[in-house]
Image (cartoon, rainbow, N blue to C red; front, top):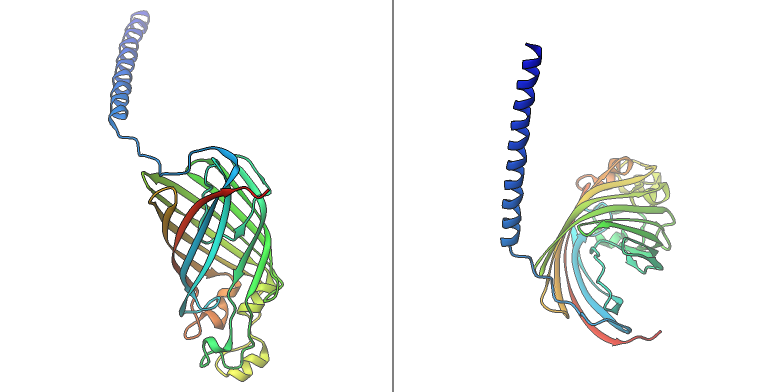
Length: 292
């Protein structure tokens, strides 16, 4: 009986295996037919000629609404220009509106590293005379540093920056973010998480309250944060009209967390831990002979 049972089980297993192979072959054929029938999204128009002696220069006009100062609950609009250069024929590198002005000293198809700099808006008494009475100004800052980017696949980019403040503060700050990228015809969508951090020098400059400030203001208590952290997300959509013109709209959100979140400056009515940004930019590209 045991030999007959083994024989029957072997025959049954053989039938099941043959059926599974047939089903897999049918499914594979059907998937191939469907894939062949699906339209392939057309790529956005770009400069296609390859010439190392020609540059593609992109001029960008930016406008965005952001908190009036770090931790503020009211918003202001700012506009500023930017420029980027690449050699004709080189693919345009993905970038996001919230990253610093950067230049790659070393790059491959998957990795880039180089210097970067960011501008941080300051906090001034004139921004809110009613709530900021008695507070010292925390001036705007430039934050030079270095960045690194890793793009393991076309649809994912990871970027990190480490910077040191000048003028407004002298702390160490940094950011880490990832972007999931999806192009479709002339459109490109991206979204990803953000994490920002700063040391005690940065946190005390923009979120600390000195005893004399608390005494003069009369509505806050002294506060000394030991660090700054925030976490959030940024999403953007770009439409490319042709190889010269493109427009981008974006929106982002960051939540101040950790030590700085307990500052009186990010509580009502002085401010808010919820920090939003909304913006748009227009790109215009043209070619010119390389200068070096």
